Structure formats: structure tokens, C-alpha cells
Image (cartoon, rainbow, N blue to C red; front, side, top):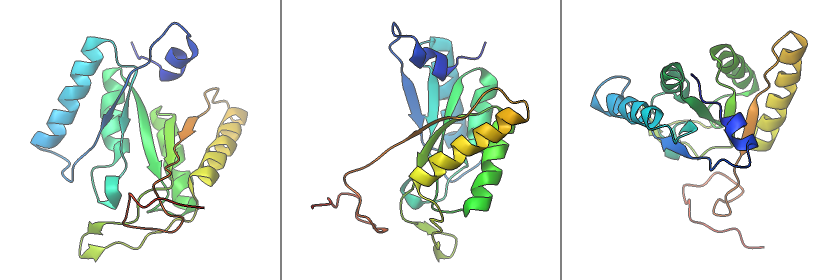
Length: 179
């Protein structure tokens, strides 16, 4: 039976626990199997409401949270997909959103994202067509459109704000904004 994060959070008697997993650059192998094993153990334990999966942490390429998340979702554990704005324009974000909805994964942590790290052949060119606030609005709008077409479950969206990021893309994650 699927554990549903939104329901767990709505129950004031629950202490909600989530587990964050950070995928590596490989799609197979010991690292990926280790993450899936951790998720299986979390599901069997019964105290974890959802697994949160990072999206290219530190701006470095890694296995998509959508792929790993779907494998975990099929185990019966709800998933929070980190969704960053760094690598995709708004059309790509909308397409990815529809893909997540189709897979049943509707818990999204909307993040602007870290500045691009090193990938194939060097540093990638960041997109940042939207930021986390605009992405949250897009998810709300798409939820309304999906409801009109018969999908009763909207996206369950959150976002995070860090006081340690500068307003422009920066490799210095500990730089504080002082006003």
C-alpha cells in the first residue's frame, strides 16, 4: 500500500519523517542499488512517509530523480521530486511536470537550483528561464488544467529559500546576502 505524504502531513498526530537520497552519476551499479536498498529498508521500517530525491545536486550531473523516484514509488513509498530550474526552459519544465503527473509522482520541491557544475566537456550553460517561485505558480496552473481534464489530484508543491545564496548564480554557497 502506498504511503501518501500529503495525508501523513494532514494528520496532526503524525510525526512525519522523510529521507533524502542523492543519486550519483551512474544509472546502474553499486551506488544506485545502494539507494534503492535504502528506500526498500525505509519502506519496510514503516516510519518514513516519503523519500526526497535531489536533482543534480551542486549543479553536477546525476541520475534523474524522476527515474529513481519512479522505481521507489513502485515499491510503495511516496516520493518528493526535487525540480530545479537551472537546466531546462519553461517548455521543458512543463513537459517534465506532465511526465511526473503521468507517473503518479506529484510531490515536488521546487528549487531555482545551484549554478551549473562540471559536466561532459566542461561547465554547462545554465538556463534559469523560471525560478522556484514561478515554477510553483506553473505547477499550480497545471494542477488546475489537469483537474479540468479529470485528474483530481493536484501537485503537492513546496519550495525552499536559502539565506546563503547570492541573487546571481554563484559557486560560493556560503556567501551571505547582507542588506
